[in-house]
Length: 199
Image (tube, rainbow, N blue to C red; front, side):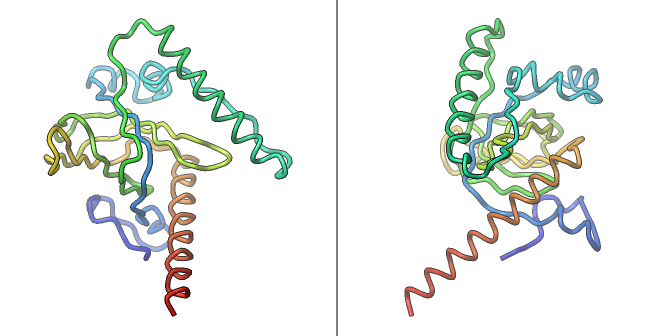
């Protein structure tokens, strides 16, 4: 079911812009790290500096020209991403690593997201996020977010963190919204198939 996000009530839209409020609950991998206010103020017009400092230089994959090569492309691309990340870690002198949430339930929309963190945050904290999306053309999106809500989860040392995206490019916003609609269709199709088998 398509619904408007509950956690980002400060983002209001009407007409075509309501698309950014469409959200989906999904299981995604998210890397995150708190950014100092000073770093944010110095680099907010060039967030790529923050992302490179936090996550390392990204590997840019070529676009798929032939859809028949899609499976091979995915395998090679994911292998390259892993090698690139390992090299960045080995070469980095920065001992503080981004934390990661693997295969956790997230709630994502074009305006923000909610995820589970292994550390606490305060309202107003700036967080660098790398969200891994299972798409053929782009595996991850780097985003800056401002914490609007952080509460203790039911599990020890786990926190539910809600962030509002800051400075998200229109291109990345469209990728997220496209992914949300894609997942909505997949979930609707899956539910429909389950109901068909039950009849």
